[in-house]
Image (cartoon, rainbow, N blue to C red; front, side, top):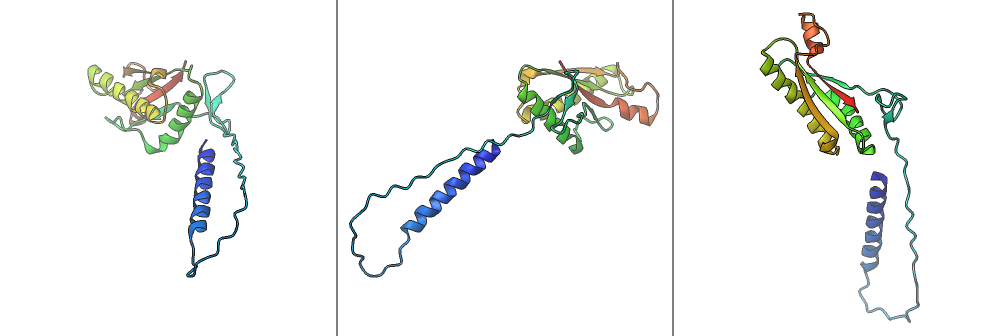
Length: 179
């Protein structure tokens, strides 16, 4: 689609250049008019269809794959007490957006999680903000909001129950699951 727009823009620039060049005149003396001949210039517009690789799913119909067939991360990690998505995660989220746009009947659940520090209420709210951050990026990339469900588990579903900084880092996440 982008290639078609570029070709149309290029064609428009070329036609404009030909018209401008045809209108330019350097003659200083009157020019005798020649009898006009019927000249018809035929310009054929050829639409070039560029087949873009579309991301999809593995055989299980739930594991997202990028255009090269590689699994795409479904888990996105956050810093302590933050709900800001890392710039490093935008490429994977773009692939998820492409998959959802190509499959309007598919839905995702984005689950926000926290580590076990903080109150239950605080962690539920933080998990919700994390899910909303991922959702907002997908919607900005063209995904229909009706395809997305957000849920917060707070500290209820820990990836690692240990009480260490490594475990806490693994628990501060949002997970995208296809339905």
